[in-house]
Structure formats: C-alpha cells, structure tokens
Image (cartoon, rainbow, N blue to C red; front, side, top):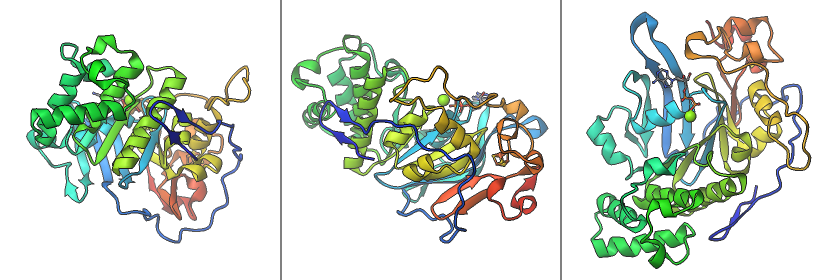
Length: 366
Ligand SMILES: Nc1ncnc2c1ncn2[C@@H]1O[C@H](COP(=O)(O)OP(=O)(O)O)[C@@H](O)[C@H]1O
Ligand code: SF4
Ligand SMILES: [Mg+2]
C-alpha cells in the first residue's frame, strides 16, 4: 500500500475487489505467539467494560487485547454497535456515567492510565492522547477564530508563550494544507467548509504533540474524495511525528487503504487482528470476510452489494457461544455453545473455532 501526500492531495491505489476465499485459509500453527513486531506505545490488556452492576450488568466490551506501536496506524473496524466508540471512550477515560472498566489494564508508553482519576485523565487528553471526532463543530468553538483556538491550545498544552504559540499555529495551519495561513487564521469556523474544519480539528488534536491519536469516524460526514484527503493527512502527519493512531470506522475500504494493521470488532470483542494486506487478501474470520465482500468496488457498479445477512446484536441479546453464529455461513453446532478463544497464527489472530485444534477446549462454554 502506498500513500503519497502533498499538502492538498492524497494519491491512493485504486480500490479493487479483493479475492476472498470461501474457506478459511490454511495457516501454519503459531510460532511466535502473536507478539507485536515493535515495542508497543499503547497496550490494552483484557479490557472489559460493563453497564450497570450485579446480575443485570451488561458487558459492552469483553476482553479486548490491542497494541499500537509508535507511528503505527491501527484501523478498528466493525458495523455500528460493535463497541468501537466505547473502546475509544474507555481509552480516554470518557465512558458514559453508567459504564465502567470492570477489569483489564491500559498502558501508554508504560504508564498505566485506566486507573487514573478525572483530573489526571484530563491532563492526558490533548497532551498525550489527541482526539479527532466525526463532527468538527463539536470540537470547535464557534466564537473564536481558527487561529486563536489553535494558539490557545498550544499555550495550554505545551506551555508556549503567546508569540511562540502564534508562530507554531501558523506552521500547523500550513502543515494541514491551509493556504495563506496569515489570512485564514482570522476566520471563524462557520467561514470554513466541512473539509477545512476537519483539517483544523486535526491541527488541534496534534497541537499538544500527542503520542497517540484517536480518530473516531473522523470523516463520515464528508464526501468520498474529502474522506481520502483527510484520512491521508491524519496518517501522514502522525507518521512524521511517530505518533500512534487508532482510526475507528465502519468502512472496511477506509482501513484497507490506510491502516498498517486492522482490528475487527464484533459484539464487544476483537474477533480478528493482523497486518492490513494479509487480513484483506486472506481474512481468517468469517465476519472479516463478510465486511470485505461488502466493500463497494471501484471498477464496476453491482446492482446490489453483498451484505452480511442479519444485524449486530444488541447488548441485551448477545448470542451464546460465538456471538456471530446466527449470521455466520460457516457455523457448526459447537459455535452455538463454545465461546471461541483468540487463536494465533504468527502475527495474526482470530476468534473462530475453525482455527481451534480442539473446539471444546478452545473457549469456555457460554
Ligand atoms: N450509555 C450506554 N448505555 C448502554 N449501552 C450503551 C451505551 N453506549 C453504548 N451502548 C451500547 O454499547 C454497544 C456499543 O456501542 P458503540 O461503542 O457506540 O458502537 P459503535 O461505535 O461500534 O457503533 C451498543 O450496543 C450500544 O447500544
Ligand atoms: S466460531 Fe463458528 S460461528 Fe463463529 S465465526 Fe467461527 S465458524 Fe462462524
Ligand atoms: Mg461509534
């Protein structure tokens, strides 16, 4: 995958329909226990998030294990309701009031952050973790000029003087592809187009020079060509800063073009994770295969896209065994009872009984 970027344009390889085999790939047994090739910046271990307490508690995130290396872009993909936004909220310490981290551990560059209180997390947000959300208007102050917002953020996150901050703000505007920064800094958010506003949000997220950037559906509101430019910009700016990125999207095409590695989420679990090219051309999990088959191809327009039948279950009705079994074309009887464990094959992992040597031992009976 090649991403070439100048200040305005991103060039992409044409998106072709991947060749997706019907049967799970034959893979060599695990040799290196799925270790990450680079020292992780972010390490999420067995993270579980619940809503409510006691017997009626609902498990919204279940045993999430993820790692992101410096400069790496991890795509997190899954249909609506998979748990992607809750994952990002849990990492930032912004879970809804009824939600809590019931177990697990999150470390950022070796520092444990899941146990920090609100005031301490507030210092991490913006400074060590930058955030980019879907709707720029919720991140921008309509009453402040673009220049003042970025300058204020620079002063508060990096303790710069106002003249140092202003100089840095103009550099940042230039880096995000805003021409004539000295004129445009005086504009208010409503004077910018949607794409330009999202560029400003990127500048704000990067202003504190964070080690990790979380981007939750950052371009869903934009048209397709703008989406490509904006995601290319995020990828490029974070790579040059060696910042890790978690790019959350429901669009498998977006991760295919931009992510170094992909984590696929279903019903609150990570069901497959691996390097993008391998995962896209040779998916292990039937859900991943279904998502890939529903990417609209560029080279022809079918009357109907292949869709995965059925829908993401609600938290209250997560099926027993493998939660995907009611929708899975390869489900066998054991899938209804046995919760698949993560099976590792080199640097790839999938939660599917098709890869278990002994399906009954592979997981717990739900
Ligand atoms: N505040 C909440 N209370 C109860 N359930 C919630 C709350 N927020 C999200 N959920 C549920 O958690 C699941 C995951 O939601 P979310 O992370 O927003 O999904 P995604 O971002 O992948 O679309 C969904 O079933 C959703 O209904
Ligand atoms: S465990 Fe069974 S139902 Fe789940 S994805 Fe694998 S084959 Fe399908
Ligand atoms: Mg979401």
